[in-house]
Image (tube, rainbow, N blue to C red; front, side, top):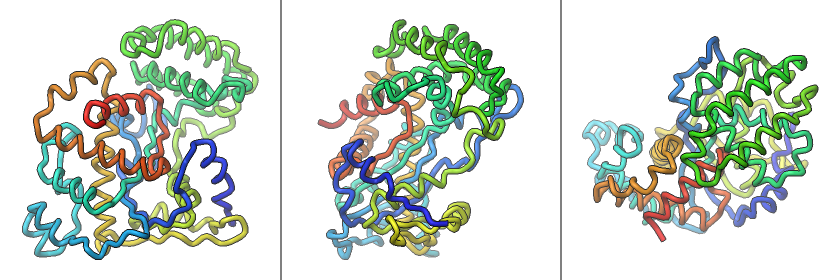
Length: 387
C-alpha cells in the first residue's frame, strides 16, 4: 500500500515553526519503555504495572549533519574512557545504557561514566533527537476532544491547556479513573451511556481538583469550571473519538512514531535498530514523497553500529529523565538543585546543554506528545542549570 508520508510535512513545519528540516542528517534510533500495547482490564487495572504509566515511550538517539565529518571520532577511546567491564571490551560486546548508569534519574546522575559519555557526544558535534509519548496522556485526551463539539474554535494552546488539567487530575487517583473507563468499555462507549460516562468524569474531577490547584499556579477554580462546562455541554449523542473502537484497547502500536521523522526529515538517512514489530509494520506500506518512492531508512543490527549503541544509551537516559519529570511536582522543582551533589549537577547541566544545542539546530529534533505541565516542568528545571 502506498503512503505519502510527506503530505502534512509543510503544514507541521509552518504550524510548529520548525527549521532546518530540509538539511541532510544521518539519524540513529533506539527506543525505551516500549510496552507495545496498552489495554484496560477489570477493576481499574491495565496490562502493565500502574507505575509504568509514568514511563514515556521514547524513540530517539543521536544524529549528525552530513556536512560534519566523523572520521576523527575515536570510538575505541570512548570505550576505554568509560572503563567498561573487561568482557565487553575483549569480546567486543555492544554497550547498553545499563553499562553506563543504573537506577532512577537522580541515581543515574551520580555516574562518572555518564559524564564521560555526555561530554563525548557534545565534543563530537552530535545532536540528540527524540519523540516522547506520555502513554496515559495519549490514552485519555480523546475524552476532551470528543466533548468539544467544534474544538477548532479553541486555540491550539487553549485546548492543550484543558487536556493538561484533565490529565493531571486523572493521575491523582489513577486506579479510580481507570475504573470509570473500564466500566464503560472505553474507548468504545455506547451512545446511550455517553451522558452517564461524562457525568462520572465530572464527579471524579470535582472530588480531586483541589490537589492539582494546590500544586499548579496556572490552574485555578475558574479553569476547572471551564473544563466542566466543556464536558457538560458535550454533544453526548456523538462522542466521535471514543465510539466505534475496540473495547478497552488504549494503544495498539507505536508504528506512526517511527514513520514521522521519515517524512519530516525526508532528505535525511534514518538508521533504526532491528525491531521486528516495526519492520513488519513498515512492510505494509510503500512510503512516498508525493508520488515518488521514499527510501530513506534502513534497519541495522546494533552490534554492527556503534552509533546505534550510543542511541541506546541516549534514549535510555532520556527515558529516565521523562519519568522523573512526570513524577515531579511543581512545588518540588526549587528543591531539586539543592539536593544534588557536584557530579549530579555536572551531569544534569550537560544534559540540558545537549538538549539546548540540539533544539537550537532544529526544534524538530524534539517531539513531545505530553501534557503542557511536563514541558513546563522541564523548562523550569533547565533554567536552574543553564542560561
